[in-house]
Image (cartoon, rainbow, N blue to C red):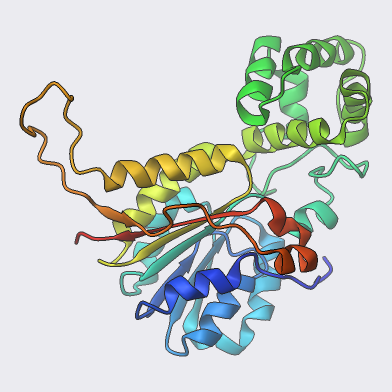
Amino acid sequence: MKNPEHIPVLAEEILEFLEEEKIETFVDCTLGLGGHAEKVLRYFPKAKLLGIDQDENNLSVAKKRLSAFKERTIFCKDRFSNLKEVFSKSRLKKPNAVLFDLGLSSPHLDYSGRGFSFKKDEPLDMRFDESKKTKTAADILNHSKEYDLRKMFREFGEIQRGHLLAKKIVEKRSQELFKTTFSLTEILDHVFRYKKGEYAKCFQALRIAVNKELEELEKGLESAFEILAKNGLVIVISYHSLEDRITKRFFRFKAKKCLCSPEEMFCQCNKQSEVEILTKKVIRAKLGEIDLNPRSRSAKLRVARKIIN
């Protein structure tokens, strides 16, 4: 795989939050090509990093990028839903910050050959981890019931014409199975009349289903909170409303002081507020960053501080 120039999204804003803390251990749950990790390791010369990624190619590039910090880095090929287990094996101190930079990395679109982009004719795979014998995008398209396809496009892509798309997919596969991205875009051309935004939503829905991304995020956030040191930060960069909604809901739940019914005169649950939400409003990339890195246009940053032991 090529080693493209990588610009980490919202890196300066993240460093502003981190500089208020004493960073001894930093966990990057979506290491990618190592852009955020490099910024943190340079800014905090005593910090140690645990970098996690499902993609072997990304890990290989990140290891080379971070080779100057090899005495302070530990790498692991795994899902961040396994964060607690991975961290316990690292023998590092409790982290002061855990970062999730969600979604695709640029190499997935540009170089992976796994069908993440509708602009190239590639096998319909879409697995972040090719070594796992899990369903591919082609498996889902070729074998899912029409109802399940409709549900996937509605819930993971928020596609209005998902019912028609599911119907056309079932009709087509009765004659010829889906194998490559262009076999799918032929259907998208018919259903969406070349509205490329709808193509992207369809590919997003498939990718989320293949990698169980929303389930992964929910488990990863809970694990991150459990392993964090007191006053540690959970930092999340999301790129679509589904991820952002899960993050916002998680932070708000953890910040609540009481879960009792409004009908109760006094609190019976004794719940304490567990986090302080530091981003009262979501933070977005500035115009200058968007000009340099168009991927940052849809990015949303949320940060919360753990306030209990």
